[in-house]
Amino acid sequence: MVESTLVYVVVDAVATLTLNRPGVHNALNRQAYTELEEAVLRARADPEVRCLVITGADPSFCSGDDVRELMVGGQEERRQRAPSARPRPTPAALAVIECEKPVIAAVNGAAVGWGMELALFADIRIASEKARFGELFVKRGLVSDVGGIWRLPQIVGPSRAAELLFTGDLIDAAEALAIGLVSRVVAHRELLPEATALARRIAANPPLAVQFLKEGLRRGSYGDVHELGAWVSRSLGLLFETRDHREGVAAFLEKREPRFEGR
Image 1 (spheres, rainbow, N blue to C red):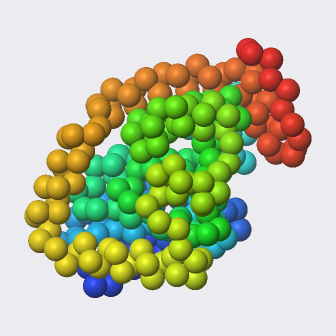
Image 2: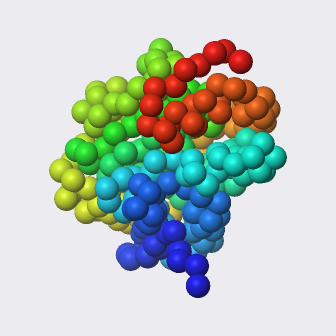
Image 3: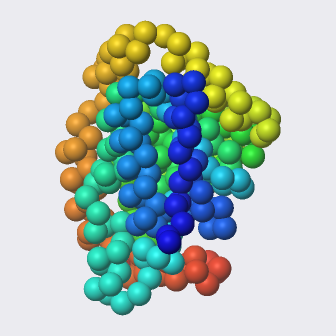
């Protein structure tokens, strides 16, 4: 029997989704992407659920794509397995983005690569003091998913977003709070209780009013995510075939500094 990559619990109208691959810092393979999408859709369809909390099993929130499973192998094999082979936004991303119910990301550790995207897709982000954030795609010779390109500039402003995207730098929880990436930072042991308490306060409000408020925020702030997603898919399709992408992956696996050539 294949072990699940996610734990799903509903208590007091709050669905808590915990990414559960701690041995690889909750990196997402194909199974994990599918189970995340299915869990969000399950919560969306459940009339007893009024708010979602997404978190990770310690020590990390999510380290993004599982590089060993999705980005290595022969050329054709990599083409079929890699992020560029998936439509953008990914089904898991769309499940979160289009969720009518509020989504809170309880970021308990590293949220990097697609893990940061997942945090950005949430409506509210609360961070543990141990949280770290990073748009690492440039380090692999790739572009961000729609979270970094679409949501990040709206949250922290275009200039700060550009800096994070172009450098791939990591920032800690204090800096994330200072630039408005998260709404609060709490002691690590208090993270899930704080996120759950907030989710319960939201869930206690009239669900239709909350859903309309969320839709109003979406209409007032966001552009066409599907159009942007198509551009991201085309861009990744080109970048995935570059030498720099292969070098970025190899350097990561070999734990060395990459040598990029611009091709």
